[in-house]
Length: 428
Image (cartoon, rainbow, N blue to C red; front, side, top):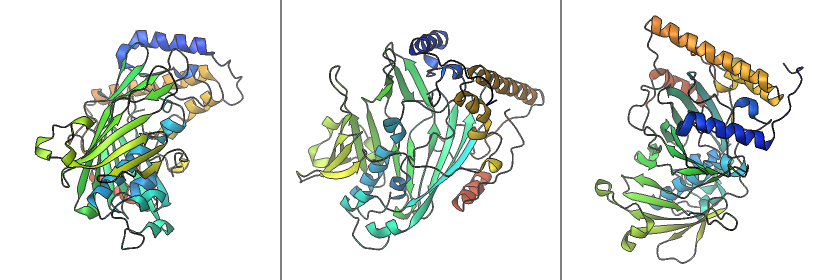
């Protein structure tokens, strides 16, 4: 394949025409920016559908640091710090996601596992209430140690396309889970990307803090710059973090950008006491001053501060500017399952990187045809497909649960063991 002659890379005008023709054909169901044959080397696409290595651990050390603080407000701030670092890939890189298949196609049943081993330390954690310079389990000097964060995901549904994920840091007793599903609509000048009906956000659990659970909801985002050919992500929506056990809630408001001038990526927010049984406050301005615990301000591309109630001095929560996504540990090629993303699409990816776009398209079409054949065979034999690592396709509501096999796999990832047996039911 590598010896084939590279094809001419399409120019921006032809790429834009292709994009607009796809939008006309598929309508609001599509977030697909380019077909694979129209991608330049190194470029990516964002599409509606599950992402095997779409994860929220661009800075895994911020996840591992959740729960260190002995103070309730400190723990909410730790959750917020994780939140602000989870999507660095879209701040530091292109506003796109890994190469995938076209919308409307038969999708493969896929899974993915990976892990990170990181220092048990975040520089700004010394700024939080309840984290002492030395102490049992809450010391900023814990950075001398390393902790492992494990990640398991599986596509659990085709129609609608949904993936379940589970994140675990056993040493720290912190975990997270949820369903990933995207909804998209072309608005004329941009694409509005929203969480799908089964995507209720990220559910973070701190076992060592009496199983405090935090629900983190996703804001709507816009993918703009389509007509200029300079893609960018903007957010001008609110999102929420709630913890019923501590009766604490955070509202983050991403500020709308002006038409003139450089993007500021500003946000403001508030942490306050709320009533879980009567949760009606959805705007920062509607929070009663007597309930406020801290205010949030800054740029989600730069420095973000919190100001405790009763103080006028902002305290640095996190500085995004010097951070970049951390490298993940993945199974060696010989241990990857046939339906893991890296192996499943390896030939297609190789063809694209070698600018052999026609060959990449043919390989992708071959995969899709095999998927159709396998699906027809299962239907004829009345074989029902079920998720392998999770108990339900879209249940329990918002919070997927691991099967017995899923729990065993997670235990293996914790110890650095990636080897898995092939599934008895194959998608392609």
